[in-house]
Image (tube, rainbow, N blue to C red):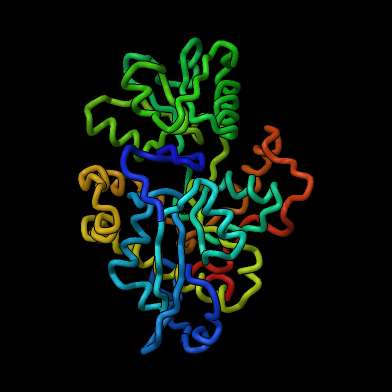
Length: 358
């Protein structure tokens, strides 16, 4: 799904909707007792006990959809309350809002994209990714059978629609270069975020920026037999598509760190709920956004579920350091980074994931 902030979206409503202030006193009431490791997941159990839940605000990258299913499963099944959090989830009112609000500490966490984290930091915004929600790229080249684009080399002489996002344009250049295709032979058109409509009306032969788990699934349900080329299988270094982001100053606050750690533990539990029963796990999402197509959302969750899970032996939300370094190097090599005063410190941390950094 090509979102307004540069990654994804589907046809549907765009809902437009903080608690701020003294939470430190409440934090002292929270019991974060570390028990035995949960089997196979590395999560250390958090006990809230009979406590008053602390307010916690999360702003999404876009309107609620299946990419956020673990979060809504955690909320619907009471896991946030179990760890002493009263979580408010809202959609952004502006495409640039999530990262900007995290940087300004107006929200506890925001969902964004790894490339956007690097871009924000390059512009001086002090933000840090504290966990991955989706563990690999969803961004893909999607086409319909008549276009004959089954591999990157088939893009020669074709019309490719994009959402006009610079780093996705760099994706295309890397893919063409790896396939030995002269970039000048490809006609690139900015189709905004109407990626599937541009395909269906034959305005373009292929689009780059669609999500294989969303537009691809939607086209399959329409029996259009989409041809999908994932960018990380065509020369673009892998990266985490969706990440949880907070402000660097938030990480310096021990109470804030504790709240984020408990939030991540609860979402890990929500992810396991989805594994056990995807339909039940979708209940909270469909209640939050009744305009969603339940059949499409269930199919998207089925495709995306493996990508919510961390590599074997790693905790939920794991961000692979080698991959982050490689992707940052790719961005720099393609002229996408180079700000005069980038934010200091690391772009990501795994210290607040279940069982880590204790």
